[in-house]
Length: 231
Image 1 (cartoon, rainbow, N blue to C red):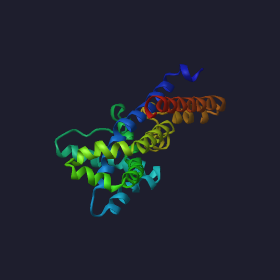
Image 2: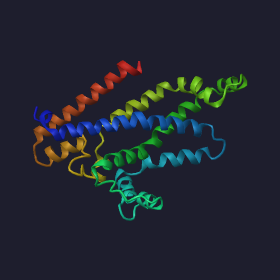
Image 3: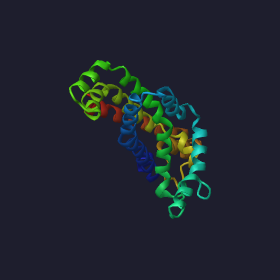
Image 4: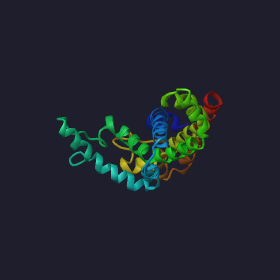
């Protein structure tokens, strides 16, 4: 009950919602798009698959530190690019307006390749005869993608969305490494809120109640997805 009346807890819930919306609304379409591109590459397909998969096998701590340098206000790559075009440098991780978006982009960069490999495997398993027959009938690559490929890989896309929702609900490590929930708690998610305000303050009962809430929210979201969308 205490958690449900805490403004900081609902800020954390909102940020978990941002993770879910970014993953399902932006990351998943990009995953499908790049999977389709790589599937139709004739040369160096193995190199592309390795390149996109590499971030997912790297430690989250390494990813967070790497992107921390990219976001660095004075010497970071992003701000140097902005300076070239005459823009003022931005404080990506210390400004509430940009901190959450910066984390979302970093998290997507880490896990997009993992899901691309999953979707790519589903695309490659589609019999080539279907695509060749459609091409013979005059269907363009875009028409074949929407009429043949996407309907046949719908089950794996559904799995990717489910995993994205589950991953968004348990996100914590990337937030801890990059901002520790700051500035002023604006990037806290439910897991980091539990660690900061319950576990580290030795309020283990409060921590247990938050973990139960995380489980309940995750269960409700996945159940709703299965009932309303994935069926």
